[in-house]
Image 1 (tube, rainbow, N blue to C red):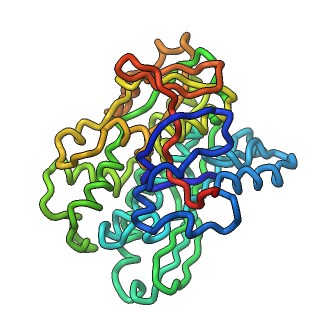
Image 2 (image 1 turned 180 degrees about the vertical axis):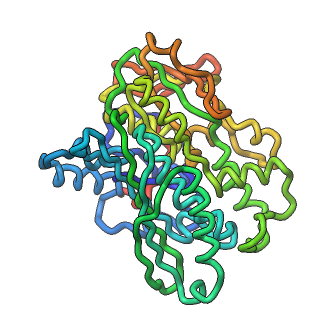
Length: 383
């Protein structure tokens, strides 16, 4: 069980790893601009979704046969009698909270619905095998080609990833689309968030901040209605802008990296960057009982941001707090660095910092050492 966000609060940073949950009240997130202030949706007094997840984790903590890990990682792990470990993850996408229909095609939405779950499976070092997809759609959608195009996008990624659809459900909703995605994978050696140790080096795949930049562009430039059978074409945007928007609409899960790291026994801990580097690093460090120091200059910021029309946003803040990049953050023992490839399938991995014994997150920028606080979105503020 985890909380996953579209775009994260781009606010001040500073973090003590002993905290139970991120401070998300310091600035309005992009998703809050989509759906209204999160505090309006609070279901319980003084509770964030992180508090609820922690409470459910305590309630469900009773040991069960063959359960390796339940709530608290990118996926649950169940040991099979064959010796394999089954990784199981679930994700929800809700219209006007996680996406807007006028910004995306049904095909791209189908791709993303599967991609976000595949990213969790990649973060566990598992190979995806099976999936269930459930949809709630309004009556007006049923009368169109939306579902056909949605499943075309879903199946295209499923075939490329070796995933078989084995079930799901469909129901009617009053107005908005709701998507529930479940993916199951297998591995002989799962990589969890809890394995990082002081002295391990921190690596990240790909480039960061591009998805958040794409969402900014969607929100500020004005867009044409998406057409179900055509490529998405926002108005008045450059090629760099369109590629950044595509980063947001069609994320690519890093399955090759996840599989390689587990097969070669290289990563000691791993998490996918759905909530943003600052937040997901905090999750990994909390589960491992460690801290970290991050070199700002080493963070691989998406070069398309500098070429785009986006103005007024610090690219580093987008990389730290933007989220939805779906890259992998992982730790490696120093003695194993020489066995780590510089890239796989055209995707690089770079070292951005080191794990520390002191349970604090620190960012070094322009020679200054600053506390690093997770800037992630939360659905329900604790106030």
